[in-house]
Length: 269
Length: 321
Image 1 (cartoon, helix red, strand yellow):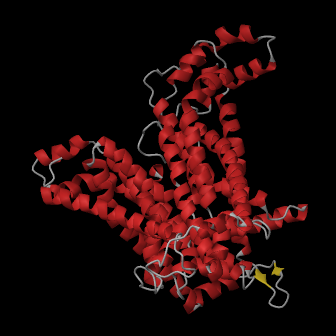
Image 2 (cartoon, one colour):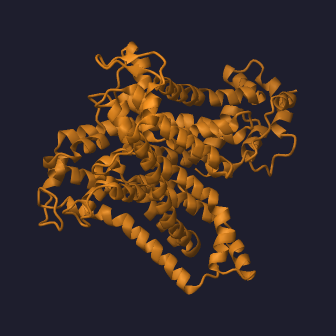
Image 3 (cartoon, one colour):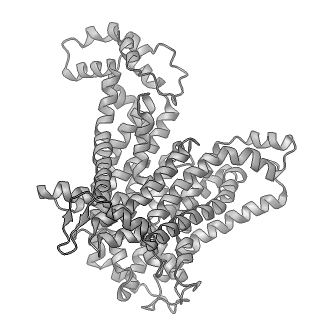
């Protein structure tokens, strides 16, 4: 493309500056987790790994981490099943209300989180509590699954669109029944999209705080809830710093894996 | 007969499916009876079920949609509807119990209260500002990524943009708390400006990615053609690039706008004393224990988003989400 030299330079500068702004605050958090000072002050006064040890040994942090993992796995499992089903329905069939269904899938993330949060909170308390099911890990999983469906759905929809239906038709022509075709032909072709969608769902659930606030009962604390509770407690500041820093480092993992799994295709969503 | 059934129910292949190997009469349906009816007779139930499913596209579709529609259509929409109904109830001021009688009082309070109008307008203003800031920052970044970078660099740049997207929301908000605190790196202090800044930072990747995807789909030859026809950079942008990437930008704006509109946590972390709609909802559930009023307040962002979604549906933006 024939852009003038100044235009190119300006665009590259914008990209570099943008990435700079994206990374500097995260680096500050990383740096700050090694700050010897108990209270935050810029610049850091000295280097220490003491807070990392404290965070590692913190029972609250460990418990919250485990809760987050359970919630993430549960929500992802549900989202994988539901998201895949809808993606097949939308991609392979034309039916009345198809657009409405695709809008419905997007709705839980298109509406502000607080709305989804109180709607679910209200529903759980009026419908589930009479049956003795209080707010807890189960309701957190249900809440998370509701908005995780869309990530799986998006990944699957994109993959199915690229594949087309011809291979499945060929399989049917060769005498394979519906289930055999799915097991031997369709599933292997969509496996990596499923994994990528699942990873992103997990990351989404792991990070979610607003819906979690409203669906977790008194005893259930995910990692984001733990951070938020301790954010304003001055004596917990160093540990919060470490947990934040650890999360920044950990966030590289799902994105790296999803990138690998999507077979080098750029847009992972 | 099978095809007749399919056609009766309007179950033609979905429009989006590329159909190079699918002629007007779909082969499997045509062959099915001769190939499989004899083969399946008396076989295991699984085989019969497969044959049945194969022949009845309507049943297949219903099965595929059943669970997701029960979950999202009944449970989720049901919850939203119940919330909406609750907005017309009230709470007993003394006992704090729900009074399940229809009343407009919540909405009257909401619309006549000067405070709420200010907060609603402020929230929309913040959401619009965040969306605009993100658009202005994201477009050049996405353009450089999609059209100037080499394919190899492109992959790394996408990762570089995606990684902070999956860094925790709270960590990012917290990072800005550190940056902005009075003894922090920037030391600008907290408030509405800090909120806009933090929210723009939080949702920036949600704007970059759709625009990048949109630009990637835009053939380079189109830009060259525009150049050959004498258009300079700005004119090419205005007449070719922008109209074609507009739906992608709108898709990004759905996220930035909606996420900003409902946020109350970043506001608590860096907002100082300023409040947005989300805070009013939250405080009315927690401290004030007034679920009906919280529900009434929550309908405001929902209405705004529904209007927004309906308005942008025609641009095809929702397919870009």
